[in-house]
Length: 302
Image (cartoon, rainbow, N blue to C red):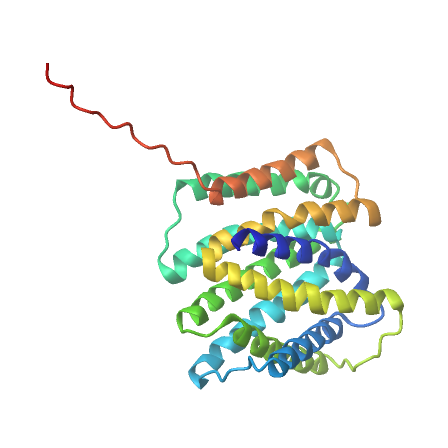
């Protein structure tokens, strides 16, 4: 079951980064995210009501669900969508792999699960890989100052996403099922996004472009409802740190899409950087084989 969940999340999220790119245009970013999660909330809540799986949630859990909505379905996406306006969507996906580091630090800070030396070495590989991956952008900073802006947006969005992961662990410990937390979190996130967009003077604009609408449907259903339910199920099964290991897998899909559809050009140092990021994540989260110690039998008596 765990392997299936990994596969579902990888497949769904691997293509979302390019779909997010299709949302950047005449419709404001905040309104696009509002459309995405409004549709996702309607689909998920409607499904739970029709199948009679909608369950009441105690009021003491709602403040945490509001935080979940902000972390997973609101602020982080504002930052991630903004990042794709500056750098290729595949690169944003690679930066998102740092959620493994953020999740490990969050587990340490909030739940006392101190990372070991494997984390230290893995994080060093990951950070060095990001430096290699963006070597060209850093070198050409004087000609492309927007690259750093996109990187910072993506890193901040990843940190907020990891905070949402920590909240999901808390809700699971409170006995709140994933589907109930996600459904209400999407509703809260949608409301907060609408308020935020309204305060910025934005008004709803009906999308008419087929590519935008197609991307919106993909982002709302496979990219939000299915992927988030599967991801949070992983968090509950294997922990927030190991669940974030899925971010090692889908950037490969995202960068492949970015190569063919966005013209992303690979360089030897960039490819080396991606390899170092993947190696760093594997170092942190891959299980090491255990070798049984040989038993020593007493010598038979003569």
